[in-house]
Length: 114
Image (tube, rainbow, N blue to C red; front, top):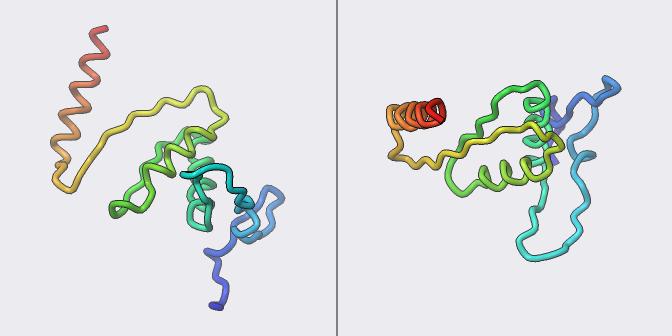
């Protein structure tokens, strides 16, 4: 077992260092396709909640098939906030920034004319 580092802990509400493992909920199998939380998803959810509570934008990036969409969908389902606005854009390795800018501008134009 490797030695612990500062990345293995977070600061709890009382200002004390606590292990991320203490935040992982116990897995209770209910049905096929359940989301199984692990250390990485627990950290990600925690940081996403901090960002959402301070009205910051969230962008998950990484290689394909690593669970980014599942993590975001799970976060949105569990969100206690009713004032969350989401926009989804499907991108691939061939998506260029200019295309995203074009899509964004078209979206803004369409909704400003309504």
